[in-house]
Amino acid sequence: MATAIPKIDVLSSRVTRVLGLNPGPFTLRGTNTYLVGTGKSRILIDTGDAGIPGYVPNLREALQSSGTALQEILITHWHHDHVGGIPAIWQAFQLVSPFRISKLPRNPSGGGSKDTEGYSPPQGEETTGVPGVGYSYLREGDVIKTEGATLKAIYTPGHTDDHMALLLEEENAVFSGDCILGEGTTVFEDLYDYMKSLQKLAGFKPATIYPGHGPIVQNATEKIQEYINHRNMRESQILAALQKASKTPLTAMEIVKMVYVDTPEHLHKAAAGNVTHHLHKLVKDGVIDKFGDPSAPKWALSKL
Image 1 (cartoon, rainbow, N blue to C red):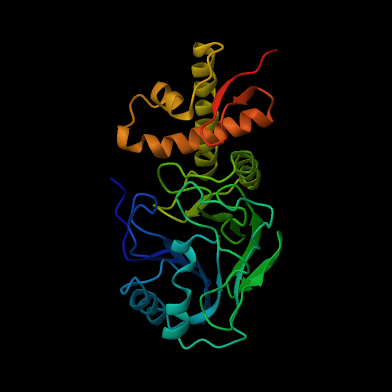
Image 2: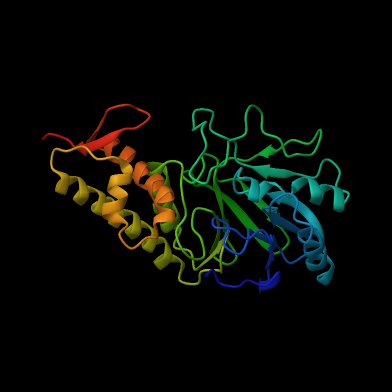
């Protein structure tokens, strides 16, 4: 059971969390959105999902309780539970250009099919959902400031090709988006990129993680290492399953049944997605080979 999270919670002198009220198997209790700063205007990180009637009133309450307004919006990545609330916020707060909604750009060469969470990537030019209003695109290392808070953009692809974490310099804290969750593990489009992103975040040695879902993480460095260790453990288990099969190629689902022995069967399909990511990475590493029909591949250890 996911940890209960208040609808509005002041987490520090410069960070207030407003829950997206969109619970689900991938979103836990809902998407965490954050108001950041100490002055009369605050930066909003992520916007929750579309069609959630209680979210905007809670966001308004959080702003009014501190006598503040929105300065701009930062988006960690393109998934609908992070961008879907943009049009409702724009309308409710009567925002007008040049109010900025910023994110990192999509990678034109990245993906194109549904990702592990089943979200279909935007086709063509990205849209905020507000007519005539586009994104302002950031680059890695860009700094966004408001009174009391300095945020640095960190490119952390893997969960999605445009994923951005944000370093809050005043607290040595990271807004991790979906790269790291408050509990459990996340999913990803590309495991090779994702592992590099985890290593990048580890290099900042953050004290705190404000995740896109779940409770805040105080033992941040340990949590990042836990994620790295978990993926390495899964890789070892997959290699052990292939070793046990010897020269007999296995499907991803056959590997799941050997590795995820304590996981309920209704979750095996999702597990097979993660296993497949590991298998693609191991092919790139030259450790295993892929056989058969591309729509139903099998995998076996490479011949040395």
